[in-house]
Length: 344
Ligand code: FAD
Ligand code: EPU
Image (cartoon, rainbow, N blue to C red; front, side, top):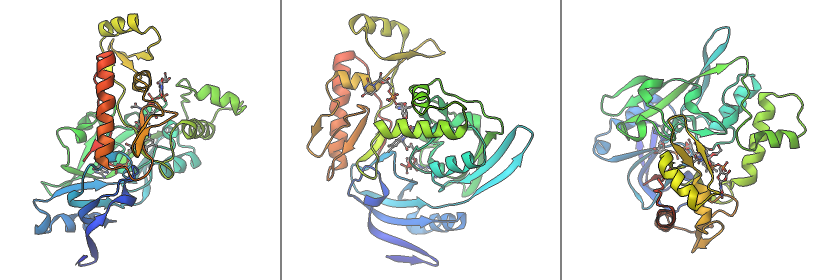
């Protein structure tokens, strides 16, 4: 252990509690930051100038395939602040270490609409823009106003608006040209004072019927989504996982028509650009992976897109399983799956 003024830096520190896949691995150095001053102080140490750095929030979208030979920074920047409002909107600035679902609940309590469909997504606010989190017909970009991020190279905080972030499906500039170059410190959301309910996606309406709901509200939509998610996604506190392991692949209409001749039941939906999105879970299930286990890991029995750690699996084992899944989908459908989870 090393003391840096008021901060503690741990050596060879276990990352087991800091990743929802529950991989037993370690970081060469590990520190928590709860202020921007602590972050800048930490990054200004000569020892870390050339070290690899990894920011973690909830660790719910990473897979460690080996020990991390660098500095892991656990983001604990907290606080939610209303920065502005007008007749229709509220602008809410949340620090990067705030729990995502905690923010959703805070908005619901205050009747600020826009993120209720993103209920129960694990992780922290600071990671949400990294892959433009999405669920049940809503993506982060739909409520995004701006973010602040500390540039490791320029040693200053820079503001990004929506177009700067180049949001896409499970994608942003922070996964591409700015990978590992910024620490997101806060995100500002533009929320609606009057809700626009989105209930057409998936099983939301069915669940609202089952709940016998007569009057829609953001509270009941959130509850319906929590129920649906809890019924098919494994709780990472009980079974190690990182949500969808792969993205849903996008293919051309021509390729889709060929596939549909061979597989008339193929699960899909049309995109506004004319392409077709396939359900990766369906493709994987057709390759007979659903519920199958190999060693200490396997494919979840209720959701074929989720790889689970039954306990004691290494990251390399999970990565190997993902490779086998990728190859069998490629072989059967000639479709390339892309991993959603960040591999380290
Ligand atoms: P981490 O796993 O800690 O980090 C993810 C990546 O972001 C890493 O590359 C990390 O270095 C980087 N990062 C984290 N914080 C910062 C920061 N402040 N600045 C710069 N880089 C940073 N995702 C969805 O989109 N939709 C879903 O419906 C969904 N459902 C899930 C369900 C389950 C059960 C699980 C386990 C995961 C699910 N996910 C889903 C994936 C995951 O929850 C999200 O990607 C979430 O945003 C990750 O947050 P995190 O804080 O855990 O990120
Ligand atoms: N399906 C199967 N078998 C399966 C799983 C899915 O056939 O085992 C088919 C079904 O046809 C189903 C369709 O796939 O109708 C879609 O399944 P689901 O509604 O469960 O959603 P998904 O496409 O598997 C995506 C996101 C989730 C998000 C949900 C709800 C991706 C990669 N995943 O999953 O996000 O919560 O939609 O919007 O886009 C995540 O990113 O980690 C994540 C969990």
